[in-house]
Amino acid sequence: GIVESFNYMAEELEKYEHTRESFVGNVSHELRSPLTSIQGFVQGMLDGTIEECDRQQYLETVLSETKRMNALINDLLDLAKYESGQFPMNFTRWDINELIRQCFISFITKIEDKSLDVTVNIPEEKQMVMADKDRITQVLTNLIDNAVKFCEPGGELKIWTHRENE
Image 1: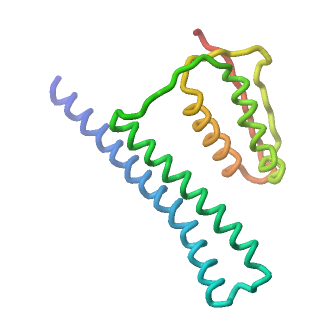
Image 2: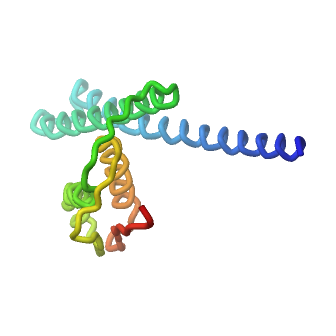
Image 3: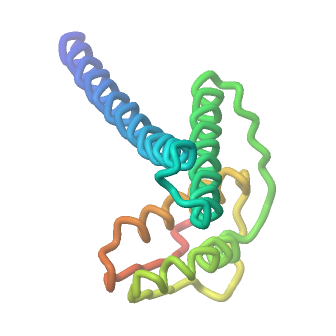
């Protein structure tokens, strides 16, 4: 009855709040880490700890870290838009198997650097979907990036698709 429904809602809210806190903690860490690097590198260049001959390399790292932080902040802004219902979706018809192949290929260098054992089982035939291609690209990129990042060197990476019903 009503008590069970109320208890269920309370449990779901508690789970949501825990997930939210975990998410905020992860994002804070993802931003703090590159900021600490950037601060250290810039400080080292200003106070002479980093030699003149090494500055180009450190500046490239700083640029890379700022781009990564910018992408994360853009993702957060997208999430805020989505949660407020102001996130326009652009649905078109396209082949998801081809997109998965393209996303996978973009990680081939990172995969080889970690000597991962890869199994790819994506059917040759087209698998047409009606979805927002940019959003699905973001999801696939994040999934593959995390899979590669958190896989042990020499570990196994499997990518596959299969059709289920419609």
